[in-house]
Structure formats: structure tokens, C-alpha cells
Length: 516
Image (cartoon, rainbow, N blue to C red):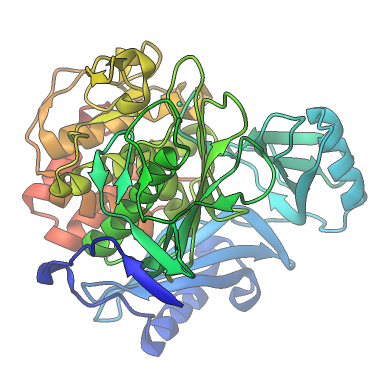
């Protein structure tokens, strides 16, 4: 097989730094010793049985970070997690989200098939769907009034009958009642030579085989882009050309490869951003191949990341949007995949808002990264502005409207700029607003929309390093806004020092959204 790349994206030497490594044995031993010495403090009885290492890494500063999942009598505790941070001198500190002193029976009275049937019936699902069921403990707290043994049912609905969704449901394993349920499909909306719709003519990675060019990038793990032909089932057909030119720069889908070129370019830029800025090898950190599906369904005004296919999916829009394949939307979706491999913030409540905000942050950072390639998509802190039909007239773009506004979240009429105690009750696309505003102020500086506080920005480069380290090393799935502030302070201290301008900047930026 021969491979041809339209134009290689060269790496600057400054980006060729060493990758992070696995924790060493000494660090693991120090962590275990800490857990055993402090088991009672954390409300656990048997460290070996109740704490299972999920992942670990030694960061660029030599600090080891080891993530653990909590189990009780062999059953996983939902959002029961901890991260041990082991310094070079062996000192151990902990990010603690363990559920202490659990005491309940782990013998279910309801069969898993009954739990699935209940969820399917309650959602009214009629067509095909994928399912996963696991026995878990839903602990007392924000998700449940008491500790419960539950069947955690995951349903991914993708067919030509039902609305696409990825549902997480928790069914009481004693009485069969649905305790909590949310749609965890991580979308952008509530909204690759590649002749793209939104980025002009760009270079894209292609694969040449038997006189045919494929929209498949073998320099980046073989990532590829497909045409779903307006269906909702399957992986689609990889775009091909005989002349290695994909698209025609038009918004009207007269060449179906145009949207494919945008999605492919966005996938390349996001992949390169995480590699060259954060030292991350692909979405999962291990170089796993991913792909993009465009022309999904009919009149589908959304885009989403799905862990089940490990892929991005884009609709063509209808009355409000053109195809949802702009750079920041692509970056947003792939960042959901990164989140699923790191903090995995639960897609509900305050943690869900932070999950969405994280994708908005990285989508914006991808837009800034791609600006080095002189695309027409001028980088800014607005999300999805290029996909709005109302911003285009006879092929001319005027920036008037966007999905979300990180500089002024309430400009959309629904997203608050400030934290409040009822924030967790909002749709996650709206509860992202305060953290979006925080990141804008942290990186750019400005005046708070909440309390008039003036924040001196620390710049994009330092701000994005802090946020990435916070989600990679200090946040857990249940992290709320207060926890995000502490995680970012921990990250700033590790990167720059607790007396640094950057640390003070994080403190000021969160104070500016009323998180102290």
C-alpha cells in the first residue's frame, strides 16, 4: 500500500519533548503505604480489595499521579475515585472522592434484563440499540438520597426510528425503580487538498491505493472520514477521489466531500493540538485510531462524540445551521473523547457543565492552533459561529451569532456567567457558562460579568496548560465548580509554583465568577 500526503504538517522542534511515563514501583509502593496507614480516615477497610488502580503517569515535573476506582465487596462504586499524587521525595497527597464507610447488601433482587426492559420502556425506544449493564453502587450524595445497589444500564440509541441518544440509567437492584437517568451523548448544540466550507483550501492527510485516494490519514493512526449518506446506522463509506481533491468550498453540499474535508481537517488539527501542545498521543493518549462521520441523518442540527464507536458524528443542519463541521466544533467533540479518558466528568449537574466547558475550551484552543495555517476561521472565544446560516449572505461571512460566548456567556440569553447554587439544575450546555467565562478571564483578562472584578490574564499558553493538567491529574468524575477551582490551583502550583502569577490568576478568575 502506498501512502500520499497532500502536505505534511511539520512539527517545530520546541514540540518534540519527552512523553510522560508510567509511575515507577517506588511511587506505587508509597501510594499503597499511604492508603494502608490512612484507611480509617478514608472510610475503607481492605485497601487491596476496595482500591483498584485504573491508570497512572509520571508527569513532566516528575510527580506521579495514580488514579484508583473504588469497589465495595467487588462492586464498583459510581464516581467513587481517588488520585494519589506522589512527589519525588515520596510525599503523598490525595484528591479524594471516595465514598466512606459503605454498608449495604450487594445481592440484587432484580435481574439485569428486567432493569434494561424498564429503561427501554420508560424511554419509549422502538428501534435498534446497544446495551451494557453492570452492577454498581450509587452512593449517597448529589446523585442519590442514600447508598443504593443499582443496575447501571447504558443504552446507545442510533437508528432510523428513535432520537439518537446515549442514556445512562440507574435502576434500583432491589425494587426495579429508575433512580436517576441522563442522556450522556456529548453534543455541541442545544448546536480535510481539502476545499472546505469554513477553512478555505487546506492540506489533509490522504491514502493512495490502486488509483484511488482515500480521506484516511495514516500519519495519525489511520484516522479517516466517512459519508453516512444521511443514515443513522453504521460507520459510513470512506470518502474517495481520483484526483486527491476533496470538496468545492461551497456550503450547499453540492459536493458531499466538502463537509468531509472540514471534518477531516478538524480531526487533524485537534490530534496535532493535543500532541504538540500537551504531549498527548491521540484522543485516548495511546494513539488509538478514530474517525469522523458526516452527513448523519436528515436535517440533523447537531454533532456528537460517542465512546461506543470512538468517533465524531456531524449532521448537515437544517434551518439554523449549515453542516456542523467547523474547527471549534470538531475540537469540541474530540475533546469529549479526551475527557472520557481522563477525569470523565459525569454529564449531568455541575460536573456536566464543566465537561461541556472543557470541550469549549479545547475547541477554542484548536481554533487558535489552526490559525497558524492561515485559515479564514479567525480564532476567538465564540463557539460554532461559522455554522450559523444567519451569519452568511451570498457566501460572505459576518460574525453576528454563535452557540456560546465565552467572553460573555449570557449573550445567548440562557447561559449564566456566574456560579450560583442552582447551577447544577441547568442543561449542561448552559451550566458551562461560568467556567467558560473563568477561562476567558484567566487567559485574556478583563472585567467580570458577575461582580466587576478585574482579572489580569496570564495568556492562552499558560491557561491551557493549567486546564489540561487539572483534568488529567486533579479532577474526578464528580468534580463540581469548587472542586474545579481547587484542581486548577493544584495544577498551577505544580506547573508554576504556589506563589506564581499563574496561581494567583486562577484564584482571581474563579473569584470573578463567584467561586471562592
